Length: 321
Image 1 (cartoon, one colour):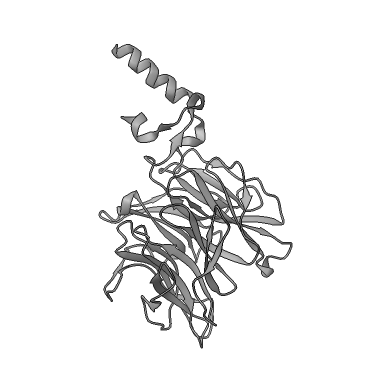
Image 2 (image 1 turned 180 degrees about the vertical axis):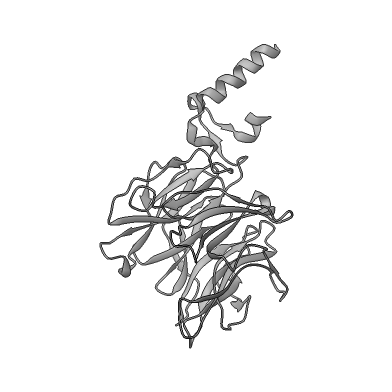
């Protein structure tokens, strides 16, 4: 009996498609353009998901809560300065791409039940029902609002909002229906972006950068911050911020670790790479080391992902047991 069970276990593993173990989706310029990839937690088993060609660009991928779909932006323009991006969704293996919005859309976030997606467009935050395509506008601000992040408990959306009188941004929070808009961090001289709710919906992680007044691109300081909702207390990740220029950060491993996309801003041959940071030990692991940029990583628990040997669904958590 034991040998038979072992044989079945081995057979299932042998039949599983190679992409099935991937848990981090990201964008990269590895093949000349900008397309989407997946990889394992340790940076191995990199698989390409989309195959767009210039002048099309794919960016900002995010897993759906059940791991079955990925939402992303596709720019369909010969002039990237026009920022004509539309929101797409596809299956986790890259199949069945669907365009679900028109153009001028920015980074997005799934609702916890996977039925809706929040996104930025025309300086405001909108929500679209992926089944009915019904759209609801949540903000109505003259300043730019973008980069929504839906809390896992479904109650709140964090987002980036521009300063009314300066080229700076900070992080705001509102109820999921658009009410109760308030700053998590007051406006000051910092530029803040990439908000992401913690798995327990109690804190927001974001990136902040301070630039010199005389030289707009002279980076003076760069932090990755975790701040509790409703509290001014902030935790700073112990990363080499004097050496790095951080582009984005997201949670992984149920809040135990963080994924960071960063580059060494002083290096002559710099490229953006993806790092894993352990919140308890402070250990930093470089997951990608490629001559081309790797950006916007997003993680999903492998117990959520499903695989399809011989057409039958098997949950990874069950298979490993």
